[in-house]
Amino acid sequence: MLAHLKIQGLAIIDSLDIDFSQGFNVITGETGAGKSILIKALSLLLGSKSSPDSVRSGCEQATVSGRFVVKPNHPALIMLKELGVEAEEDELGFAIIVRRQVTAKGRTSAWINDLPVTTTTLKQLSDHLIDVFGQHDNHRLLDVAFHSHYLDQFLKDKELPSKLSLLYKKASVSLAEIKVFVEKLRGSGPDADYLNFVVSELKQFDPSPEDFDFIRGQQERAKSSLVITQAIQKASSSLEDDSGQSVARRLREASRALLSSKVTELSTIGLDANRLAEQVDELSYSLSKFANTIDLTDSEIDRVEERIAGYQSLFRKHQCAAVQDLMEKWSAVEVQVLALSNAEGHIAQLVNHFHQNVSELMVCAELLTKQRNDAVNRICKRVELELSELAMPGARFSVDLEPVIRGVPSLDLSHYGAEVNRAWAESLDFWTCLSEHGQEKAQFFLSSNAGEPSLPLTKIASGGEISRIMLALKKALVVGAETCVLVFDEIDSGISGRIADTVGRKIAELADYCQIICISHLPQVAAYADVHYIVEKKQVHSRTESNIRPLNEIERQQELARLLSGNKVNAAGLKNAQDLVNEAKLKLTKSRSPAVSKSPAMAAAVKRKRS
Image (tube, rainbow, N blue to C red; front, side):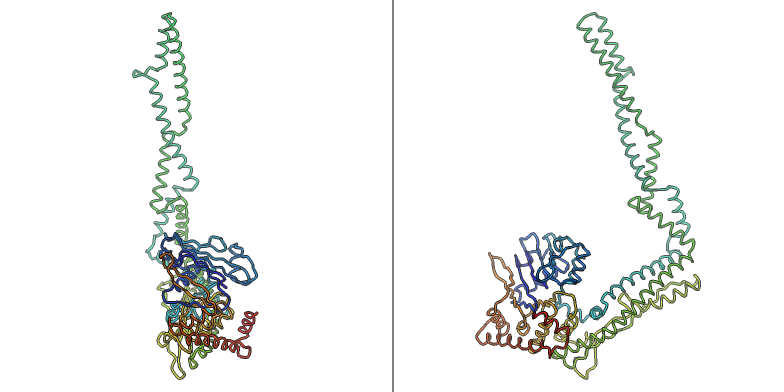
């Protein structure tokens, strides 16, 4: 169940904390009060797309946090264990805290029990926790493309469709490999001569990551050597005069001249000049010695530059960004050359691989077909039973499984041998009757009244009938499901009166299996709720804010009276509201009694709820 929901900075909600209860939670309120914001908040927890526009004006970010409580061995806990996420246990079960944040700049982040996760992971987890069902699902029910999805929820092995999808993608890749290779053989791809030239060129150059790193290092050394050599040459030339005589020699000549004067002061200067000459000699020696350490000759530097230019040329030719890409290109071309040199053998290998993949796909598809046929019987019986209780007693619901028929890939492999042709023909027999969804596609049919022909749902059902069919599907699906929370966003759209009362009772019965959060505008539905919440919009510090709070018994009676008679609430309206609640309780008591209960699973669920 969703025990607690916290919303901050979302749309017109500044800060909101809601504690939900087990069973049937209903939410009502004036149009525009902010009921849709709750659905937006839950959608964020589901990992749906976020928008910076949803962040409240003046806020840096919007944050939604939900605390779910699940039973041991729940699929959500198994998934958390695989992620290495710990879940704390309390008196109600194991707690899973999901948090989603959207910034005003559009950045989004998600956490599960304070562990950062991707949006994909969040979506995978939310599939086990909460199912939001809104008015848009009515439109999905009118879209034939979604009918197989609804049918597959009644399969015994609900993983079969995803398994088949993976096998289909695997077989599609095999088929694509055959097409690409045949196109190369026909000349639409690189021919054998060109591929051989590429291999020869690469082999002659002999690139490798180790060689590339070494050459780059040598290039850096060469650049440094050039700078050093130029500095030494400039410094050495500065130690000579314009005639080529060394500065040290001229200093010694000056020293001798000064010493020969026998004048004390000049002799002292002469000695200084001699010492300077010695220092200049040492400087010249040091420069010469350092120059000898430069171990890259001009010819070696030229070779390094030539090698670097060779790598760059190959990068451009083969559109590679790094040496590793070039190595992968070399390996791939060698595989192509080998394949082209043995075209018949390679075609046989590719076709056999495709045949094996299609055979595995066909086995899975046949199993899926069998389970779908079994599911058709279950879905029709359950939906018709529910529809009969939803004021459609003569309705007949059926599912047509139309076989998939596709065109044959236009590839001529006739000249590659009898065995290749046999495997190819058999593979195509399977492939042309398969899609990524199986051997068939489902379509729902309905006969609203006894004696009328069944017609596609898209042509016969009214808005109110669609709402009832979806409720019947959900009621049929929820028994034994692992989803913790079922959210209805105005599922009662298009119905009223007696049918609305039945819908309310059906939703209340669903609450025996899982927690229900229902946004409604009908008093007949709200009267069946265990807890009633109201959405209100008010002015706080000159700003509009939306708030959701639970109602006490008196407030609930007033809200139901408002729904019954409009904003003007009088004594008669209050009495009608109380009568509505009393009648709802009585009807639920009768429907939940063991004598009336049609399902052992339902009776067990009711017993658990009451305990």
